[in-house]
Image 1 (cartoon, helix red, strand yellow):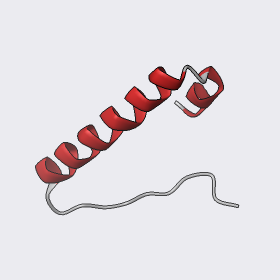
Image 2 (cartoon, helix red, strand yellow):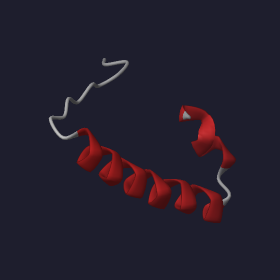
Image 3 (cartoon, one colour):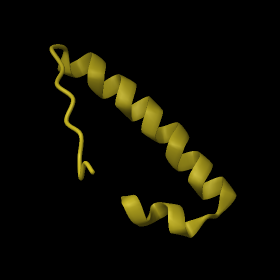
Image 4 (cartoon, one colour):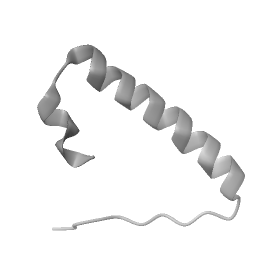
Length: 42
């Protein structure tokens, strides 16, 4: 079982934009569904 996964990137700015957008959608979904147990991974 893996406890974490690490992904490298050559273009930090591009990666930051991608993950910022992805996490914004994910967090928005969690807040809208009000499933507080899903926040345990943060």
